[in-house]
Length: 93
Image 1 (cartoon, rainbow, N blue to C red):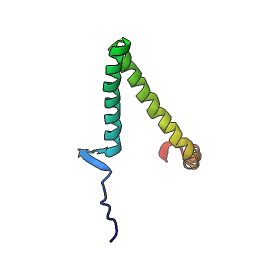
Image 2: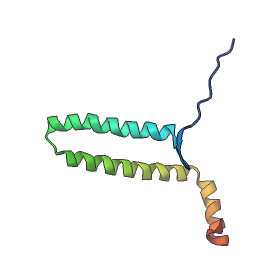
Image 3: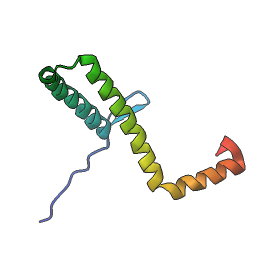
Image 4: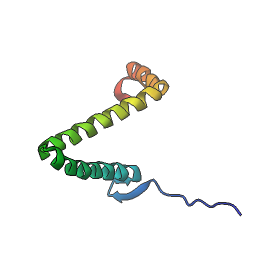
């Protein structure tokens, strides 16, 4: 008897041409849960709600940018090849 693992489709659902993936849903839920937990902590500390919104916005923005930079660094051979092709052929690549 073997263990059977069912295949989970990475696409949760489609909205027309847009595919919503599970990891996007999990990231969004994590940000929302973090917001609600931090909002309760703000009451204890005495900060304004706008401060929390700004912190979460900039944290998410810089987090996504840093994740993209991290990805490019570890996939550098591919991106180096693309840059050479862009210099040779232009934006047609």
